[in-house]
Length: 186
Image (cartoon, rainbow, N blue to C red; front, side, top):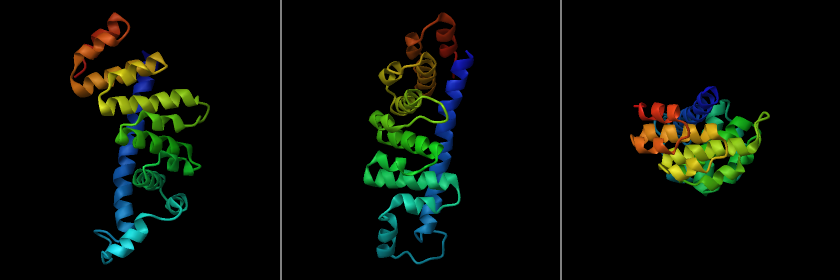
């Protein structure tokens, strides 16, 4: 049960961090581009020049806040429809969260294949955590079932059952106690 809790926290924390980063980064990007609240005129030509820098990694690295750098890289990757742009950071948490958020937003578990090893955590485990986020976001239990580690599969199905309210998903879990706990999640 301890491994399950850890995996659930890891998936949930990654999603929460990335969601917060996207929200705060979007505001920072809008302000930097002369958007609402900055007091700068909204010149469409200037905004177009700012929206697609020649080197997104360099532009994103200028930000002082890690969450803003994450949001900047994620925005660049989404605009270019290229998850590889997330790899332009030397900060492993930024890379992981950027790829995870890109994959979730695009509904594309293949983007998770780019997630590297981090702080001793095997790349396969982190890639599965990323795919679990895609599964929960897209509502695809087959993605949950394809995860390599049992704890990640269990967490994914539990989160998916909780999000959708479909307790029938609990039948896919191993162990009577786990299935019963899944059915009681609201």
